[in-house]
Image (tube, rainbow, N blue to C red; front, side):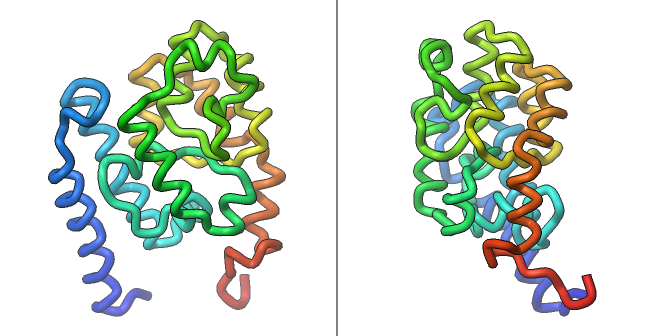
Length: 199
């Protein structure tokens, strides 16, 4: 059970994320104002998920930590090294790149995996770029698998991808990709996830 101070802190995180997102100029974000709102909405879910330790963000939420701003919702995959070492600085850079220089279909055509820029993360723009490049669902899933990364999507991120032509099949399979790696990390073998006593 949360103490009152914890509830206030969580509420503060959500407010801070909203306020900080508002200070970032919309002109810096790809897409229409409605699309930008969806991406920003994903941030609230990511920040709240990290604070609550929710199932959808137990790994990536821990990596992002208190990341606020519109970029927080762009991160959907990370390799186990990045997660194990809590490489939040590199995660921040990946999210910033996703905002300021989204991946292109040309990059998607030439990249061997879904990690189009090879930075150890997959962001939503990279998945969208694969669709824009005309890759079929199976090829997208294979490239996601080839990253060796762990993927987590909150409902806002799923909606964002669907609105950009990513199929339900890809979204569903993405969350099962490299599940053995995810389960190992969640099992606490790396020491980054601690389970409450009795679980």
